Image 1 (cartoon, each protein chain N blue to C red):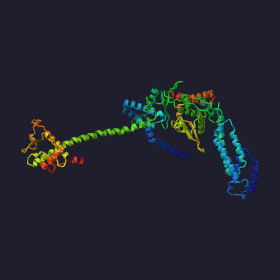
Image 2 (image 1 turned 135 degrees about the horizontal axis):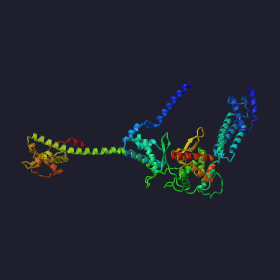
Image 3 (image 1 turned 30 degrees about the vertical axis):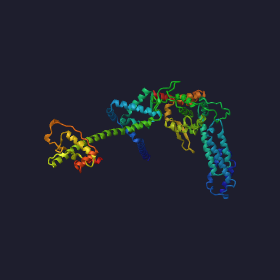
Length: 354
Length: 262
């Protein structure tokens, strides 16, 4: 059974001409019954030694690949209506196909056929065009002339190789002429050109992002400042009141005896606290809440003024005096009065701040 | 049986449409849901001075965006300029269009009604022999002209190779850095494509992968095929009408666009 089939195939193969169409039909039959024979190597399969020669098969495949490559590389050339390269390739392929015996080579033949068909289709579409055909190569030549190609060096005159050079501004010339085909909106530019090409888009984004936080920052800043000022004013007022409270307490404790000014004001541990105390106490005296006088030993004393004693309008005679104190006199006074601790305790707020 | 099939496919359609809508950003949804009473109320909410200012801001935004000829997305206009005036978008954009036409002689065109992308084109025809703008034309226009005209003359689609080969003949090698254009391949396949002058798409089922070029949406609006054909005819020293097919296409497109613009 298989014997007769093989014989019949052999007889079919002989007349297979160079025509590709026949070759394709032929091949499809071959691959059909070769599917089960391909794995079996050697004599019993019935394929003659000559058909199965690996070197020969490799050679056929390599030739097919070259051909496929050639078609892919020179696509534009092959499409050129002026030549017959596509036909040449097909004839070449037909010659190769005469020796094809197995599926692998046949598959390559099919691949080439796909490419050739594609090219054929494109060539056919060129025929469709009514009126004049458009030749891109000629177009390029005309464009070069328009752009003022310098052809002086055009001696060898070989097509496909680039001779001559385009003068400066050639593309500008083409651009100027082709501008009339475009309805491009002239783009907007700043008059002095300061923001020419690059900055605008990011600039906008940045502005918008910044505007929002800056508003908040502005809103926060003044409130902070106000609080600081208020707290300072308040601190002075509070401190003056506190000192008055101290003075009144000592005064009451001492059963109404005036207190030595220096003992009251001086902080033996801190010169600056001393200065501050003097400063704050001066407010009390200015406001008439505390009076200051010299005692029997001609030393300055202070005592709070009783509620009823405050004279309206500050009508009583006032004296102004300047008290000066420096580190040296401060130490002297501490020694002279033997001051061990401050009568005015250190305020909490200040101790925190320092 | 066939009825069931129909109902199934109908419901599938619906879900598909819904998922597409959700893809089009929630912004899209809020636009379509705007009712006329909402718009009415919004109109009352803003003084005409406020709206005048918004219109001016949108005009400036578009002018600046257009400097690079990149298309302008509605989403960007809303996000950066319109903001709280969103309900009045249609009112504002209509007035923006009017400003562009009457003050600037430009036309704001929605090239893509689905994704809401706008471009600006010139409404006035260039005067022969007069420079179109005070600034000199970008030489890239020449490059673009070559590509667009080859595509048009070859029937609307061309393989990428034809473009590169044509440019090579003009001493522009896409593989090399060009004095005027820099990275030519990038200019052509990226800049021109983003500006919507060109479409650069993969051809399906090609191995190795091949690409083809077509005209982009901007070119369809901005380029006069008739004028292009005239120039090509000039170059070939040939009557433009001898390219019958191209001439027919150019004259129908140009006359129809004139009808819509007037």
